[in-house]
Amino acid sequence: MAKLWAGRTAGMTDKIADDFNSSIHFDCKMYQQDIEGSIAHAAMLGAKGILSADEAQALIDGLDEILNDLQSGALEFDLSCEDIHMFVEQVLTERLGDLGKKLHTARSRNDQVALDLRMYLRAQGQELLEQIYDLLAAIEQKAEQYKTAIMPGYTHLQRAQPILFSHQLLAYSMMLLRDADRLKDCMNRMNVSPIGSCALAGTTYDTDREFEAKQLGFDSVCLNSIDGVSDRDFVVEMLSCIAIIMMHLSRFSEEIILWSSWEFKFIELDDAYTTGSSIMPQKKNPDMAELVRGKTGRVYGDLMALLTTLKGLPLAYNKDMQEDKEAIFDALETVQMCLSVFTPMIATMRALPENMKKAAQTGFINATDLADYLVGKGLPFRSAYKVSGQLVAKCIAEKKTLETLSLSEYQSVSPLFENDVFDAIDLENCVARRSSLGGTSPASVEMQLQYVRNAIKQK
Ligand code: ARG
Image (cartoon, rainbow, N blue to C red; front, top):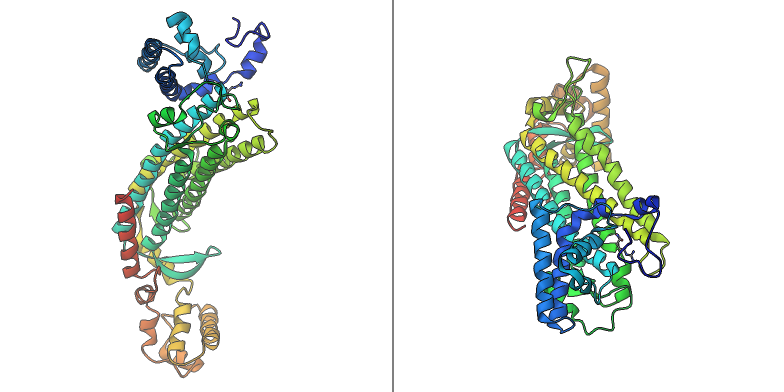
């Protein structure tokens, strides 16, 4: 069939060229936004007298019907159409005759697609935000449930200092709260209407861009028509937000994987979020966490793909830009799928505080506290650090721990040691004394929990 744009050419493209060129199999996702945009456009054309009021109303009714029919399944996408914009216009024209052909007055697919995508991403971003807050709530509950469990904190994946498990979990809460903020920020910037930019230069018709923007829930209109149809920075920005979310989920996943190994055994995942091996009967694998970690690479790929697509494009619209949609759709679907499995996985995981404690008791993670103890007795920190290190070396050589050394062994290294050294290196005391703002003490964790709860409430 000849294309809607047949004119200069007969519009009879080769089948292979058609398939290559067409985007309807993925941009059909935006049908609702496309139709809502067209309804606002028809209303504006009517309000400005560019079409008669009757014509505008008939177009609006026709578009409403198409929307209903698509939603009910009475109408199916015609995949031989080039894109969702052409499909809707074609159906409208089939149903309304020549009137359908008036809809595209003072409009181009260039501003239409920019509009649809902004509206689509605005809606999806809202859903993604909800999912982030659901995960934040699940983490908050875990942190509350295991508020007092002590585990080793790590640097270089070597046991470093004792911390509360809840403190570690809340670190992810802080990251996710920033992720949510970033997304909100990006959605605010995105909420500017490009419609009325037309092909690139605006239009000779007396249109009312603000009318359309208002009807479609935008905060404002873009002030440069070339910018309106050319840039996809709002897509790049959302992809960046998603890439950062995935990066956080991936690091969390990595810890879930480590913690559920026999080497750590700090947590036990619910069976519902693990898999077995087809050959090794003993296995319980953290596949969900591994897949989240794995899919992070794919989302980074989406971001890089779009950045690369855009980097050499002259203004204004180029067909290359059609590639924006598959990248952002894939990233959105991926992050949403990841969150939909990650959140219940966290909500149902069981912590094993005894194992955490056991790990915290070896590895000399109170050696800093031992040095701090000597500082309290008047020794400069660097000297105290050295004494503490000597004692650790002695323990390793004699297969002892700082807790099992006798007072006389302590005193043989420094006369400053007294019986209160054992209190100073007690793990619970070590944690409780890290009461600096943002530290791991129970009081600090309590404050963080409160902060996160408030943020969730005020989302
Ligand atoms: N399918 C196109 C896209 O996704 C719509 C815009 C087409 N505009 C054009 N002048 N060919 O970018």
